Image (cartoon, rainbow, N blue to C red; front, side, top):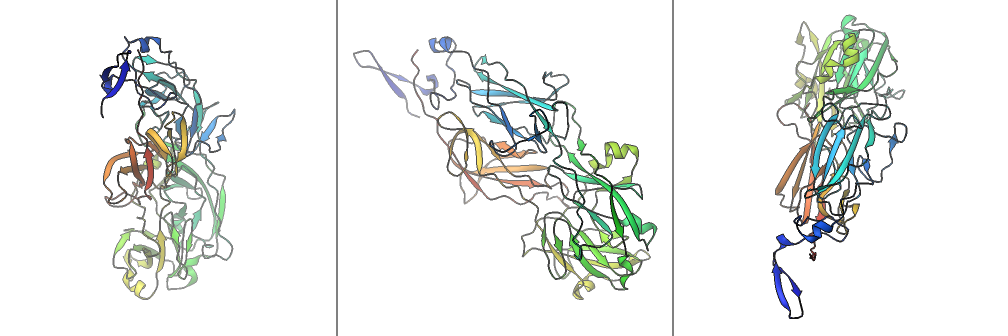
Length: 519
């Protein structure tokens, strides 16, 4: 950058100053870099103001809040934080605590420093934890050189499940309306579920919204009757905290639900008939559909024997992908991460919720990319037929898998070139400094990759962040950038845990302008 010039005196004496000796700012209202404390400008500068206008949000500054009571915001996922810019501040210090006293020895969860941007995100997946009137508190203060403002007032919020998982009964006459499994509506912010089968006194852990009833049929192959069950959402945390927050938190157990298994579908014939794949969608032999969660696979017939369930990536059923060793009793199969006895400890603490097993399926481009499932009877521990033969006989059901991807919100939060807090469209607004970007949650994701590039094509990553939150501050310099996001699913089999990249989003960062401060 070239030297800047000022004139002094009637004689036109010219004195050149290097930019490093200048006080520069975006505008009169914006943040500024401090000059040395010995100068007259620094000595006369007023103290930094205490930050005001504190606001927490999930994806947009103007989104409506849910309130836990006494106007305390309530979130099912980790929020982001913003406040009004403080004149003269070059950075901000942020603290998050379980106490409004912010004691470092027993309450402080996370602390960090952000640069000029009056917004931040925490690299944590916070657990559900309620309190009275709140469970968590945050505050911020402004910093410039050796000057520090007072801390802002403590702002409360609560982490809490958005709803209880409720039973999802199929429509009467639907192919999904058959015994052998239970289903419920997913809960925002949940990373999995525990299902308590009260009659068999077992707790099943899963990361989808269906569970089969294999234990009932294992004890009685001719089982018909009532199945009593309850379900609760679980939320595993990711990221390192200063305080000992729980690694797994739970929502409350649902009310008791009853599902009647009548008649027994296994007794409908000697040949196995495939019925449907069911999760948030229903796929049938005649009408395959795309699912965002791994479905339960339903079948009928085959007598009272056990059955082996296979999923293939091709319609010829020669490339099995999942599951292996999935022999199951009953007319349904659904993936599980664990099954344990329903002890008091399990029902209260949920120890099996810590288990992460490779039971998910990779996303495939729908409708071209599909999965196919086949079912064969088992006698004396051996399959009675090859699944390949079942496929060739057209005894196969296709379905798609495309998880809800992490989708960037087309609005970023940061400083405007005029020095004000801006929540503007990423495609048309200009930001100064690091903008805070947000995206929708991918239910199967535990963490996220964020990547940015100077070019849309060819894409050359200039930086990368991995975070459990659904927001990030992009440390980009002036100019036009593109960024994208993808989820990381630890329950995918194999070494590749990556989900699909989002579309690329444009964002523009304004260059700072400069002015001379007379000493």
